[in-house]
Structures are given as structure tokens and as C-alpha cells.
Length: 418
Length: 220
Image 1 (tube, chains in turn green, brown):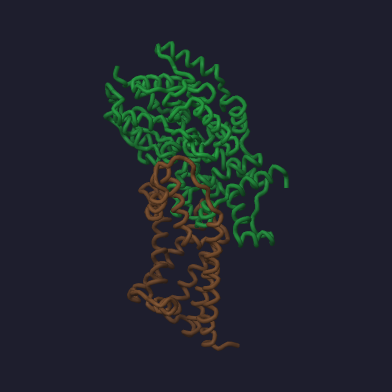
Image 2 (cartoon, rainbow over the protein chains, first blue to last red; image 1 turned 90 degrees about the vertical axis):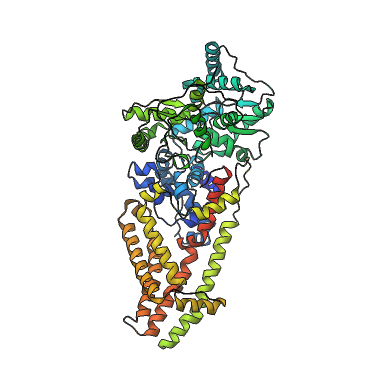
């Protein structure tokens, strides 16, 4: 056995717990998860059946943690994990799954299939079977601090622009601020409007906030590629900065997996509860709304819909907040046929968008979103994840659909009363 | 050579006891294997309750949402039919209840025999439909293993042998009954070591699913 394969197998073993065992024990091979997965419904490719994507992990569980499997292994009857299997599974686990978790909502046995695939990635990555683009992004995240290679000077340049445009000061490294805002590289490079929007809203709401120059990156490549050690290191940077600045709440920006990483996985990765709260920007805005801190003027008359970013809605629990917020500035809001916790993924989450090899399939499975949009024909789409946003724009262009895409935070800021 | 009656006595006596012991021991071993692995406590600040989320999903996952039902209609409908059919034929057939009463000391009301008889036929037909679906559907062909066919066979066998025993088809009554009991024993023996375990573990796995989601404030 090669050293890397052994590492992979050990990483898979570490993932097995009572949830894993009860999930694999319960699968009856009914195939309903395939019908819930856009990588199957839009391609018709049976290898994209969600539960089969976790096959390497299942084999480890069966051969190491069940009596029958262990006996079978002695006689060479239990299937084992080898490099050939992992090579074959690489595209299934990384290119054809966004960890959106829709399968986990549909499985009649209640198997959290997305969790099993996420766990499988730990073994794949340890055995050296992760996509090279994700390896690159993860390396940049560790060494530079951002998967896209965005350094502090780039952020400072964008902040300067925002300050010049608005005449406002963006608070940096302010000790004792109530909120510490994180940003995704995508927002810094492609959507600096987000910084401007949050600055305006926070100013109007009269709260103190800051950005840390030491830990401003919200994304976590360790989560996407499946290397818990690296994920933990990236989370720790934020924890250290939050402690140093003594903030009460860390805000996860409009990015799906960043929220999963810091809000739900974060404390478990570093092995300690946080001494501060973590909230998604939409949760913070919803609190402002409830406290009457958001004065809104002018209503959108366009027919708006909301695209649920999977890690924020289904996997994150921020479902009602965006709807309440949109209703502040819209009289014409319409839901897609499947929405909220049953929403369909855009097709580019979970590291798929960072993996060039998956470009073709992510645009193909966008057909699912297109069909949803065709049914309700909105004038504009509102969302709250810059990764969804970039991919949705890509998909809309690919399918010749002329529907503008808006960030919820930015749109809200545009409707603030003076 | 055992006589017909001796064979029947062995099947319903020692044979049945052996099968039940393997069944019970197997189920306990399997649950031990699962639960002893343990699970780390969640350190993230909770947004909802694990317990209520878990309990809710144990129940709610029995009913698919509309869009899932439309996409997986056959699987849901055929699945419901054969599961109800199995429940009725196993637990609501008067002679079976007598047997349970013999073992555990109490019984419960039965359904009229002709109803159970009809249900047996419906269940066999549903299981045949499920088998054909499994053999023809692209996803299911990809998913299916030898174990799936073995489990299918050993599930349908007691239904067929029971139907034959009740209607005295082909052989003498004691022999038919012996064969029926043996087929049930086979099912009991493989039960803990195959996907049949889902009849117990579904509650565990639904609970975990609901608990994971419930903790994050999502009803799954």
C-alpha cells in the first residue's frame, strides 16, 4: 500500500462515527437520492447517484467497523479501498457534487448523504485524489490568506475606492467594535459594492463594526477540499482576530460555504466553543429590521425571486430572514417551485466553481435552475452568495437568459432612506 | 429420515429457536457496532433542539414533499404498498398472532383472513413490480448489488410459501407449513446482517438527520 493511500484510509477511518454507521446501515438502494440531485436529473448519469459517491467511506466502515465485514475481509470477500477506486471516484466526489444536501432532505431513511460525501472528501484529499485546482486554492489560502490570492493591499485599494466614493471611513482593526465583518475574496475582487452596502447599512443602523486586516478572508478552502487540519487553521485565524479586537459578533458575508465553515464547523474544527457569536449578514440585517433600525424607501416593482444558497438556507438555517428582508423593498416577490430548504443548488458550490475541470458539467446542470426560473419568469433574482451569483450569471449567459442578479445586502442598501 | 411431522416439529421448535436467537443476537451486535462508535458533541452555538428535530424527522420523513413524490412516484407508492402489506401479513394474520401470543404472552386483534389473503397477493405483486423496476431502471441497475437480490428473494419467499401453505397448494399441509416456517427462519437469520436492518436503524438514522438539521434551526 502506498503511503498516500494509507493516509487516505486512515483519514476515512477517522470519519467513521455512530452517524456514519447508522446511515450506511440504513441504505436500501432505493435510488430516490438520484432524483433529488441535479447532477443526476440534468445528466441522466447514474454515477452521480448521491449515496454511491460515498462508496470509499462505506467500504472502510463495512470492512473495519462491522463484524460481518471484518470476517469477510479475512476471506477477501469484503470490498476494500485502493487507488484505482479513489481515482475513479475523484470526479464523482468533487466535480459532480456541490455538497448542497438536497439528497439528505429526501432520503426516506434519513441518511445525511451530503455529510457522508463531505467525510469521503477527507479521505480523498489525504490520499492525494483532490482536484489540482482545489489543491492550488487551498495552498493559496494557507500561504497567502486567500484562495484567490487576494492580499491585504488589494483589500486596502478597494476600501480606498469605497471611501472615496462614499465619503465614509471603513473602520479597520477597531478594538471593541460590536461586529467584525469577514469578506470573501470574490467580494473583494468582483463585488466591492458589498463593502459599500454594509458600511452604509451599519452607519444608518448606528452600530460599531470593523474589518480585521489580519483575518478578513471568510472563505475556507479546507472545508471544500476536505482537509480538516487546514480548515481548522483558517478558522483559528478568525478566532484570534476576533479575540484580539474583542468583538461580540463575527459576520459571515454573502458566501455559502464560508458560513458553514465559521458558523457550524468552526468551533468543532478548533475543538472549542467560540467566545463570540457568529451570524450571517442576513441574520444581522434581520435583527436590525426587527429592532426598527432599517428605514426603507421606495419599493421595487419588478417581479423578484430569491435563490437560496444551499449552505445558507438548507444547511445553514437562514431561510426566513432573506424573505422578510426582501419584503421590505418588494411588493412583487415570487418563490421558485422548490425553494427554501428544498431549493435547487446553482450547481457550483462545494468547490465545483474553483475546479476548472467541472466547468462543463456545472453549466449543464444549470438547466435545473433555468427550468425553475422559466416557470416563474422573474424580472430579477436576488441572492446572498457571491459564488452562486457568479455562477448564476455564467449560467444565465450560457442559456441566453436576460435576468439581472442582485445581492440582497446591496439591494437593501440602495433602498435605505436618507 | 425424519417424518413430515417430525420435520415440522423441528422447524417450529429448535429450528425456530436457533433463528430467533441469531436474529436477536445479530440485531444487538449491529446496534452495538453502531452506537459504540459514539459521536462528538457539537461545539457550535445551537440554533434549535437536536432532540425535537430528531424526533420530528423520525415521523416526518415517512411523507415525501410534493416535488419528491412527483419525481419518485413509483418508488414511494410501491414502497408504501409492500411495507403495509408486509406489516398486515406478518402482524395481523390470526394464526401469526396466536404464535406471537405463544412466545410473548399476549396477542392483539387480527384482520379477517380473506383481507390478509388479498393483501398477501397485493404485496407479492408490489414486490415483483419493485424487482422489475430494479432490473430496468438505470440508477437502480447501477446501485443494485447481489445482496439486494438475496434480500428480495428471502423477503418474498415467506409470502409465497405462506400463501401456498394457507391454500394447500401442491404439497401436504405439514410439509407446506414446514417450508413456510423455514423460509421465515432464513429471513430472520440474514436480517441483522443485511439492509433489512433498516427496519430498525431507520429511526436512528432519521433521528441523526433531524438532529443535525434541527441544531441549525432547519426542519428536515
